[in-house]
Image (cartoon, rainbow, N blue to C red; front, top):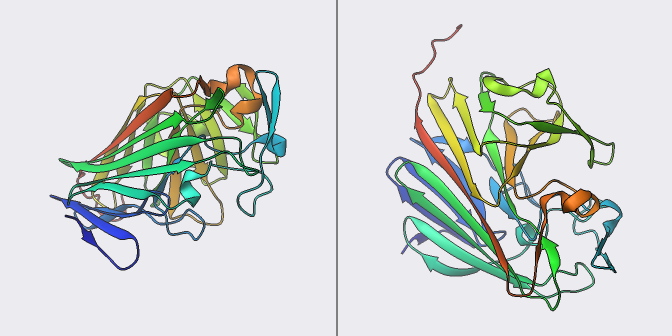
Length: 296
């Protein structure tokens, strides 16, 4: 069995990888490769999460309302933000279903209530395989009627001055003042990482569509790199970089666009009938990168 630390923390290890996980939010709390952190604890309600699952969808809901199949539904804010965001999974305490030194599987279920009309069962498996961290998330509609579902992962990747990101997208959404997507258009030069480049020194909180579900991150100062692969329903991604911190950035594979409830075709949210399910997998594969000499 895996080694449980004080509280709800569980330690996983395999070869050069060591990952801390928590029953709260089915979250990763720390992740190192050859003792170097590649995910950092910077998110969640108390800033202790290095990755959390977004379920039954990610990001915010405009006006805390949605309409589906001729019915109107409402949400209640679930954090200090005025808009309900990131679903319930990241705020809940998950059940531990399986555990070994190399993997854990959690489940979380909720019934519809005043806070959200969604009733569902979700599972998150966190597994170390080779030099990879593998996150597998699924959600099943346990309600009495069809609703549009989504899911995603919200990793907080380490950021250094020379961190380089390589990721390609066909379409970019700019951001409205309320952290909701505004209009789609071509990817601007600053945010075009097709050929790989340094992260810009500016605020980013944007959705992207039309990707090949691959990304690469290089940390020359740390001597490591990561290759990210998304599978299943994860057709979009978000990039988030605040301006008040420069030690992390978020690259969030998602099944849908933020505020999908108010976009055409629900922004990729998938209508699930009772008993139907949706799933997505993210693999982060770590490897060594030649250390760059200082000053280059």
